[in-house]
Image (cartoon, rainbow, N blue to C red; front, top):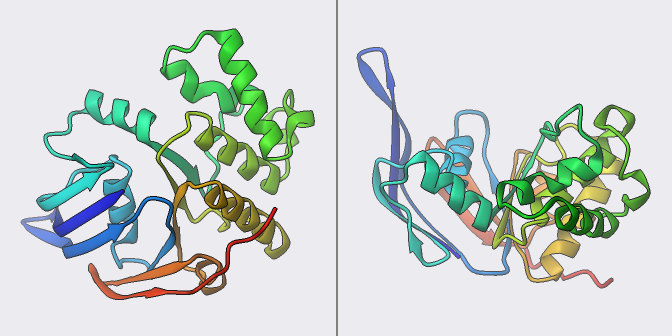
Length: 231
């Protein structure tokens, strides 16, 4: 699903460059549930942006779903993101003046799906995350956990190949975090590839594999032997 080989990324700083990713090799198989850990400055946010086609790499190769990612302009990047990737963000990134249902339906709008059809599909995914009865509520009428469930439904509505979750529990209390991780496990159980970016050990321990970054290099890559949950 994901294949990185000798991936490098630098950013200009003053008259020089900041070398953020330093020759990463990483392979993620279809259906895996992994976490990428690292402290601030480790390179995990840069890696997430490259994986999510929000940024480009300088050297090395990146293959996503057997497609080599190169010469990626804004239009092509947006198209591939819409087809292949579902995003879940720490800050939810919901549109404040749109209902939960309308927020979930947004990716289908960009695909050109007719309004009646996209609302029908969006309601199915709200039901999947347990929020069908909250479909007509605005984000400011939802709790943090409910907002994140809406965000997860939005990530899934296009049936992507992979879900990238950036600190998905970072803004939530421990009980709500546990509920969100259970939901991500259920999604993974359905066969979805899920990558969680986190700095929390207890969150990473709930995934099946932990990749640790430090100063732009992978320092460890270990299985956690987490059993699949049953539903």
